[in-house]
Length: 114
Length: 111
Image (cartoon, rainbow over all chains, first blue to last red):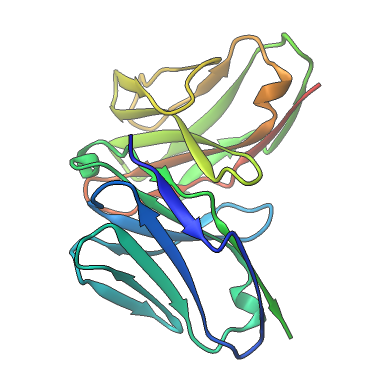
């Protein structure tokens, strides 16, 4: 079965610093999703990547899916306290777009110090 | 649209009790899923459904039952609650090829 490993597990950065979170899959990725979760709340969709080499940006967050489609990175530029939370990557096996069967990494907890 | 709704938000059960966690979506999504979230383990898939009348097991299905009689509703049943089922439960829905929307979660404690 497919497994997703996120690194680092936790991260503390000073406000204004850049940071990167990685998501590595044990199998080829066919659709990679990034979500953010505030403590005690639900998950907020950030971005979806489907093609090898694809890169998407929203405000100060950029996500990439590598060419071999087994790793994705989430990069935050000039971090702010509002970026704090838990970041989760999710993916599914080939054909999962037809099933909704997504699995998730264990999450990366981000703290941003003012 | 209300999106994905879950009830209750909080629940405390005694070992051996049964209960149903409710989930509903008003986006006409084909696919619905149940996850549990535990510290350090991310989200683990319990059961999922690709449409009314069709369900399948995820990574951690033991101790849970589901049914999907309508497109909108996907309840999760705990037949005999155990302390190991203490967790935060999330329901999600999506349409083909699109992102998955999550409900606000249910915090369940089993004593």
